[in-house]
Image (tube, rainbow, N blue to C red; front, side, top):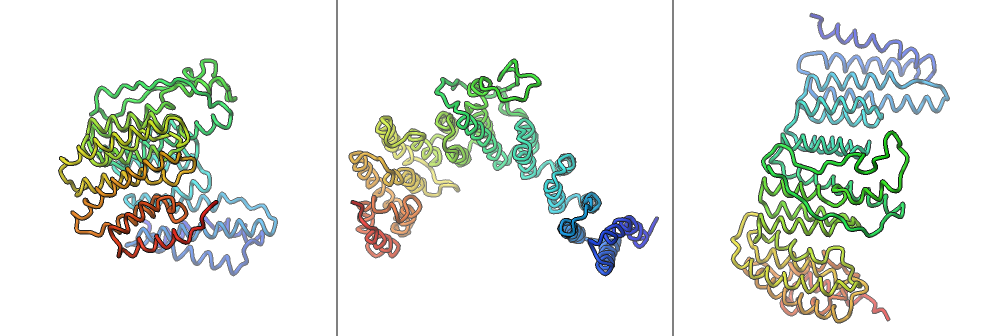
Length: 466
């Protein structure tokens, strides 16, 4: 068996022609070539000796990356054509040796795949991801990384879904993986919606809201609607040109009507029955503004949460907020939606009274009142809100703040800090003047709270608009 010095010498000899070419083209001087050879010799002897560490390989790869970047800049400056495949090949070779020896070190794998992505060596990236996921199938963050790569780099949603589906087979109890899968589907819907808007295809159409949940919730895979190219456009075979009719038909497919995110939530709730997880799904959905099917997705989400964890503060918060999704304050539908929200607040307060404290919500009543205020308070600062609705909303919010005050006192904390947190989070100093009556009421309850006094001073300094 060859010794460490023999292996190091062998690897160094492979780079001699490359160094000679760099010197001949005057990209590096003789002194610099000598320094590069010495540095590589030190690294190779360290790697081939006993006791080498992952950090040794990482530093060697980083050195070669910096050297390759310097070579490219100098080649461009002196105007010579020097192929960079030798440097790239060397970096791949070092990284490959690293992950083969320390296959459990995720830092080396990520460094390897990130460099391949930067070099646009997509076949290499696919090979690295295949090896990485084969060795670490129980790491949910790796499945998420692979899916995002397929979606962001290649726009291949089918491959991205495949990664997520396979990941859930190995990491079924990972809540973050379920959430990332839903986020990926919402990103896909948002991108298609944006393209349709650019092309002027946003016409109102009746979409199919019906959705059938999987028959076997404990199956390894989630049952998702199957969409083929022929369903989008039967005549689109081998033609990559954009067809307006196919994009119009695409809006009626289950993928764009929100069926897949709903299927993901349904399967996740069958696995966990956790209202807090459902709330995180809900927050992901409402964060995608402008998605046409956002309202119907949130409606299905609330229905699923009401079945699985009906009395959780997280479920009730989504239940209260849902009627106002995608409703403009100046639209005729807003008063009715607000009325429905107020009815749900009343029923939710009655439901929460019998709720047992949990680790996620040690004070259920406080959690519900806080989330309700956070939901409704921003509407006071919305332009176009009718004055009568503004007054009604102030009265309702003051009632909620009274209940919040009592709930905070049960925790032996200062209600003033709770009010200040909510005001700062929802309105900010520029819109806080619109909630002056609520701020005044808060100061009546907590006259010595310094944060509320600071907010009152900031409101007084805001100029009055004519």
